[in-house]
Length: 244
Length: 244
Image 1 (cartoon, each protein chain N blue to C red):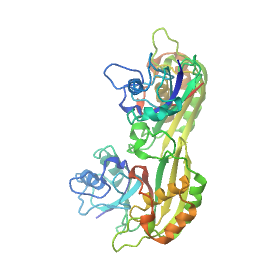
Image 2 (image 1 turned 120 degrees about the horizontal axis):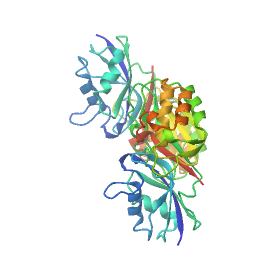
Image 3 (image 1 turned 90 degrees about the vertical axis):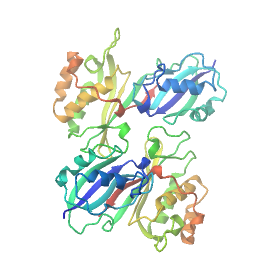
Image 4 (image 1 turned 30 degrees about the vertical axis):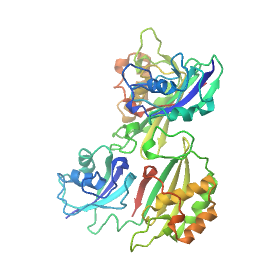
């Protein structure tokens, strides 16, 4: 049976996350509903990153085995005519039988977008965290160097029973964008639960001057997530890309 | 009585344009409603550009005379607590008595945002025109040179009785942005009614290869707006900046 790899963009604002939940709007739920008339789906679709409620994606990747009525190259157009406006299929490819969107992903890239000015945002308000306090961006960049490499991120994630929080951060960078917007871009082999939103929260403490880059390093070593400031809201977070 | 200059950002999607209209949501209507408890407004507020229904702004400028309860520097925060989420006041200044947001504006800058890829947008879909056909960007850049300077833009606007369509385009540029987005940025002393949306429509004809830059030049000289392709929708248009 053919194996398919789809790349998706979505505005996660309205969804209770990627993963299907009975009775709640989810990205997976919408996808499987749209696929039904087009494919004889025998198993769930698998996603590279199970984004949480309210988190967006510009490059989510899913895979599934099925015979499809439209040929693979016509799947994006066929699906987009059936999907709601807040999900769009960007690409579809046929892939070798063994390909699995999650297991085969070598790394993921997320961006967290922050608008750093006194006034709250109106344009793009569903995709930005409003942070009104002045930020020292050079200090944030110093702190970003601390997280690069292999670390146990227990201090900056919500631990899941029986799962390790050891991850390898491959790249971590602050981007200065127009209109007082900054983005924190992190590429890692994988992300622990809530890791990006907790790390970015700590980085804002550094930018605001309540923590130093050294504090972040010490908290990372401590391995205690009660030291982490409150988790940032999902609206600023985007799954940008999955690398295979 | 003090004279105030305010800089505004808004998501125009929900509004029937800037200008107040009885019984319809407008930016001016919301502003005057929010100002009522804060200022003894004796006249309407004046805007640098009366944006049409659905058009956005990142740098709209308004002016009004009034005594205000909060001091000028506190007006943005006070107004933002009373305004709906799709309007945000960025700055407030006290200005000389004779200042008028529209009359004194020397030039305006607009951007029209286009996402040029086969799949419709989901993220940012209220701020982008979806244009699925391949575009030759170099040809659009050639055509942009044609419109710079003083021209009678009758072919690329809806004429208003008794008003000239002669305008001076000071800068016209195509910007290549990430994620298959392009922006057409035009700075002019002023814009005739629908001018930006009609010009951009013609520029897309050039990019698609149905017009040449020479066609655009000839239509501009012809002075007949029935030669212009259909006016683009408002969602892609943003009033970026007003220069004084």
